[in-house]
Image (cartoon, rainbow, N blue to C red; front, side, top):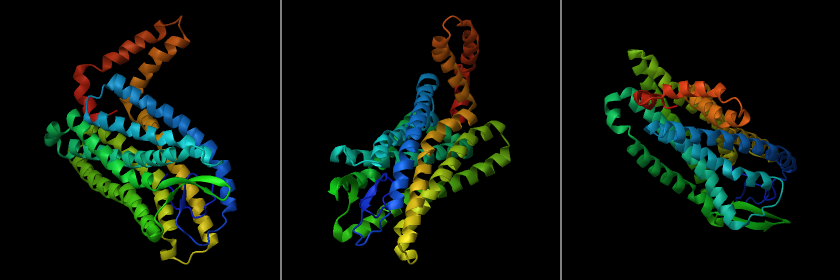
Amino acid sequence: MENQTIDSDDWPVTTEFDYGDSTPCPGTEEKHTAAKLLPPLYSLVVIFGFIGNMLVVLILVKYKRLKSMTDIYLLNLAISDLLFVFSLPFWAYYAVHDWIFGEALCRILSGVYLLGFYSGIFFIILLTLDRYLAIVHAVFALKARTVTYGILTSAVTWAVAFFASVPGMVFHKTQKESTRYTCSAHYPTDTAINWKYSYILKMNILGLIVPMLIMIFSYSRILKTLLRCKNEKKQKAVRLIFVIMIFYFIFWTPFHISSFLHTFQGLLFNSNCEIKSELEKAIQVTETVSMIHCCINPVIYAFVGEKFRKYLYAFFRKHVAAHLCKKCPNLYREKLERVSSTFTPSTAEHDISTGL
């Protein structure tokens, strides 16, 4: 998992990493906090993250039918969140108990967690670039923003995310430490500190610095273009992706900062057990907050994406209300037909520019 900065070998937290510290601090308070706090929070994230993102996948495939590059990227973003959610029940159990799932699952789930993390931010970057092309380079976008190119760039993105996640799988293993079995990263002893630093730097650069630079550039150009043309439809088209971007940074930036400070504390300031304890608590809190992010995108679609709300309403009227109220189908049939008539082939081009 993400948090690869834990010092104590006996911590029942989401992840454990042995960096060869000669005198690890006890961390007893943090152990008990993690065991009580993490399982219920992870359970809520799993429930809401799974339901919300499955609804997004359903709407995109069944109603939108993946007619644009934006649809392809939004679908892949939902799949990234689902991958992230998939690993959480195992880490929730591990927060309280020993690792009982074996070495194969230890490696696989660590890789899946990282794959969900990296692919998620990469697809948010692609969505930002998609908006940039559609608004700033509209003529070129007519040729470039196709479903075919969307599928090709998505495949490349998954490949890059996979290779970024490989170290998490390669160095993870199970081993018995004291009286319990752990699933943690064990780097070669002579280069452990270099692997530790490079891992955190890679996570910070790919997960925060690069996305921030790309998004600042893209949205500055987008805003400049919108101020010139003052096109209300284009402004609405940008709003969804902009909100997705903002929420990503709100939920993930504190964790990136905490992990950086924890990893490089020996270089940045004089550290002691009290400071380590505070930083480890900060990582626990910020990592848990960051995981909530996988539940947020479906909520954003529901509040910001006007068409998504209509499609979702149509789905519940047809498939949920129909079963709950079998004797009153006329109550939802008329509204469903009215909603369906809104999305005729003539509106497809508008859908391409507005996403959800």
